[in-house]
Amino acid sequence: MTKLVIPEPKKTLIPIHGSDEFFPVRRVYCIGRNYAAHTIEMGFDPDKEPPFFFQKNTDNIDTSGQFPYPPESSDVHYELELVVALNKGGSNIKEEDAYDHIYGFGIGLDMTRRDLQGVCKKMGRPWEIGKAFERSAPMGSLTPMSEVGKMESGSIQLKVNDEVRQDGDLDMMLWKIPEQIAILSKFYDITAGDLIMTGTPAGVGPIVKGDKLVGTIDGLQTLSVEVV
Image (tube, one colour):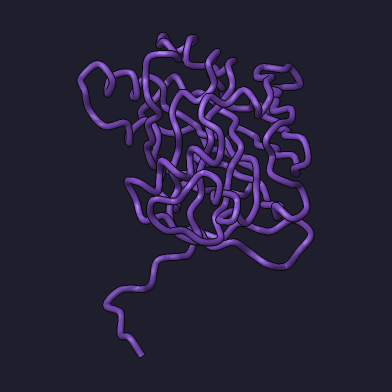
């Protein structure tokens, strides 16, 4: 038996819809600016840059349905995303084999301290302080791909206090799911337990305490989050 000098950190587990099983999370990859309209609203040209990724920490995931407004920020934004959960991995995966590596899908929010991220951009620094903070990745349950298919298209929508703020379709992704998996596997040894947050449609914006966010994607379980 391995002897630990401190208590073992708590594992991050995401519930599986309609089951008593859970998905254990290893890493969280996020693709940036993967919808053209969102890329434009952030001030960039979607035709002039290759895909890029950043990471959130595993323990940033929160399935409680609450998002505590974080410290050191006065401009926190929502970004609704399709989440892809992998059941196996590898390196240099071919696009045509990518779906063989997917367990299922869910809905997540990439909550962002936009003011802090903006400072990082101006100074050429990493984004972690704006992206990878406590409970910055609210998520709902996962649904196996065997039940919902490949999720190549379908409505993706976010309401804030019953008002539609984001409204798009999964087929609007600039870099499709197989491309994301293939590209990631060139740079990382991705594996079972990894998540990919696949980008957000246009309409991102700020939240305040008391806001109620409801995210929907065709075929998946609704994600409801209250800002506290």
